[in-house]
Length: 299
Image (cartoon, rainbow, N blue to C red; front, side, top):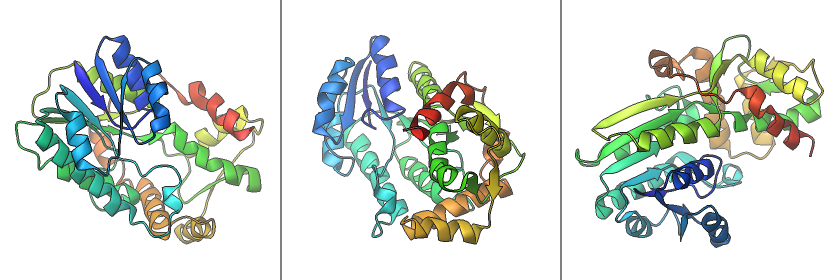
């Protein structure tokens, strides 16, 4: 099949493209960086260099594809840009995808969304996933959409490193012994590749998770990996969390959204739909990934 993938060679798109190429599919990878072209071609895919902000470029690139895989991102460092309304900017990317899918005539779409996208309330930053799902649902009924809703990425744990180094603890506005789901990008890529080879009919939602762990369990596993077996996860107030993020230079709107997202973890809003539709857990556990965390920590 001819499959077009957005997301350049990121944590999900790279293993996804590699797996699909190995399975004999004709893969085109969209990247905004021309310097990625050789790297894309080295894994056996074609490169299409352009922007998610350009609906005409997307439409032309999607044309002739049997399946398109769409995901939204703001790019490295954009969460610190003070002038950006991130939710509106990402919703605009969703509108661009919708236009491009309609213009290109593609009838099969895989959309990378997120846990928490079942609602526009109490999910903080993840509200943009809800918005984009609603935008894509406006596509004609003959466009089949598979919505992939992964849970918290292991890679998000890298954000714990600054406070571990400066304060010797993990700090957040939620914590304790309540288990929550986490996922490896490798397991996300594997599920997406699997869904691409299954029949498409109508619109479905599938959650993706690798393991369910409590914050205290995570602190123990990460601590063991970096030689701090007594590492603790410390819970602070929403206000303290917000003030700390803003003081560190984060976009105030993004900081507020992240604090609200974590509050949604505490209240159960974030996981309520996931808990009703739990998936079979993937094979990549935190102990399989923790060496990545340790390598970044020890740089």
